[in-house]
Length: 249
Ligand code: PGA
Image 1 (cartoon, rainbow, N blue to C red):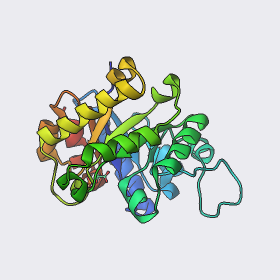
Image 2 (cartoon, helix red, strand yellow):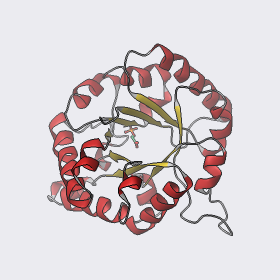
Image 3 (cartoon, protein in one colour):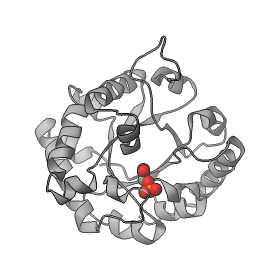
Image 4 (cartoon, rainbow, N blue to C red):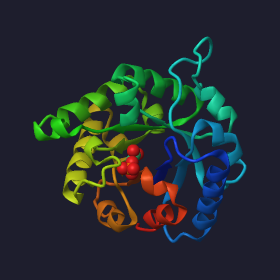
């Protein structure tokens, strides 16, 4: 049975002290939560080791990783380094990385493979921009992101991956996808996984929705049969809101 997952992407927010407080609050609320969803937080790189010490039930993710294993790549952080800091998950291909740092599907495929070889579980992001939706290219765009980004993974490898569908027009805008729009794309992704891998991979894949997900809209989004949780940006910076989203299941 596939897992329900709610992951918080803190992006470039919180200084160390505030991040540690936030992690502690999420861990405390996690213990009291009513849902059986897996809870993951993705603080900035600089906080990972410290936050690791503060959480037990909440799982730890990084927001990105390098595409090379080691060497002269100033500023980069390798998947193995993340593992050595107690990290279990890594967000790969967030639309902000694609848009501001020109990360393309080929590069992201390298990151996914390297992360998997180091033992990390990738949270691989996909999603169309508004113009692509309006011109009817949304399915082609998402198909390409998944086809290339997850290329050449074995069945064992793909079973470690989580997919996050994040329509770019919904990220940080307050404009949320309607439950029908989310379900339509999640179903498309699951059908595509049958084509790219097999029926069992598709059935067991957790596909998260991301983009202006809040306590007030989480329940209707998560009620869709192919929506298996959320990747939460803004609302994950407030522990009560974040755990309210988790409890929306
Ligand atoms: P948002 O961000 O919840 O602030 O829209 C989601 C994301 O970028 O993962």
